[in-house]
Length: 93
Image 1 (cartoon, helix red, strand yellow):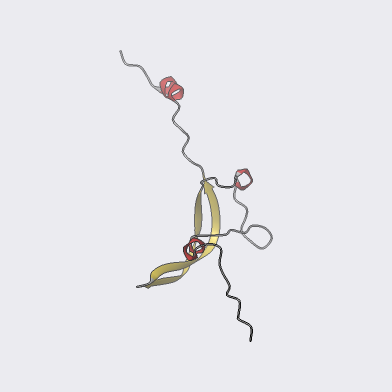
Image 2 (cartoon, helix red, strand yellow; image 1 turned 90 degrees about the horizontal axis):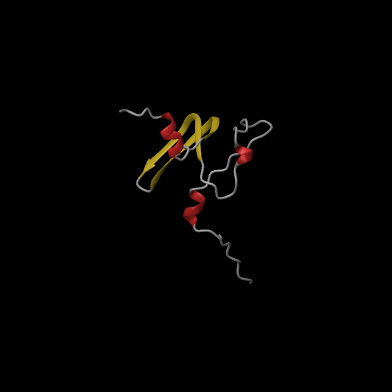
């Protein structure tokens, strides 16, 4: 009798729990503005709007099921530019 080959996962079990995939296209949500400007490993803030359809709260952890209605890419804060700050500040004498 041959030994059953054990399935292995290349990543730690915790890493898949933190992943979220968004699919856009036919019969799905509208692609958010700015999606095509993203690059791999870029940090981004995403605003997801929807309705909570399930909640799980117990000793082992918690979770929720969300039916999404809308996805937006939030724009990051621009870096402070001192020249712009000086141009917009009134000088008091």
